[in-house]
Image 1 (cartoon, helix red, strand yellow):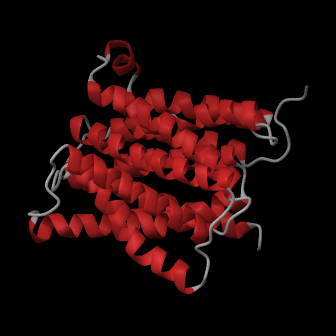
Image 2 (image 1 turned 180 degrees about the horizontal axis):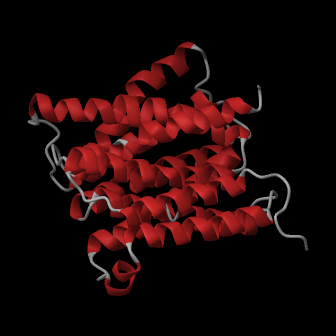
Image 3 (image 1 turned 45 degrees about the horizontal axis):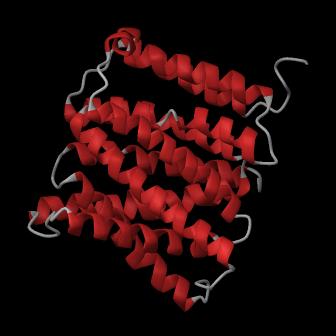
Length: 289
């Protein structure tokens, strides 16, 4: 039962972050200020708790530098992902962002002691094939490399980098301590970006503030407490590939709330993605060396 806790946490965390693209697509606020408030609102809850429980400590220079990089990387990821969502569709932007498992697998192979097993690569192939089926191969053939598309890819690279760095840092810190520093840095970084671009921080109305609260509390605070717990106790590659399932949930939510079309092709693609994720959880190698 103990071993199942990280998996359950990861499953609930995926559900929480899957509603994020739909909320951003509502365009109640700009993407950049939305990213700022997502970090800031979560920080309001986490940082005081960390101070009260004495988990906000000063670490060695290398660790503090990694925490700063994690915060900047995650804040940048959310900002560019928001732009990709608002500039295309919630489904497409989520799919492009969730190419992260490919980058995580390569990064793990190059930088982490725990190398991806053969089942990870098999699962990744299935997941990528599923993504192609889901979005349609003709889209990949004819897709123009506009800014939302480029930002979607960039978000995936930033996402993968964050997962790899956070895995290293979480080996030394508590989840609350890690999240506190990450949120503080992300909030300050995004505040500077918004201020520099003269993007207003107010004037959204109750509807806009409501979406920001959901993003901050559900999509950031709850989701990433659970995902950070899973990351601390599971392989980085497995976490990243499981997060790919949010593309399926986001597509369903976008269909229901935003009237984004969903077809049998998308359902088949989603099933292949889930199959790929399932393969990574199989301990026995599917192929012998």
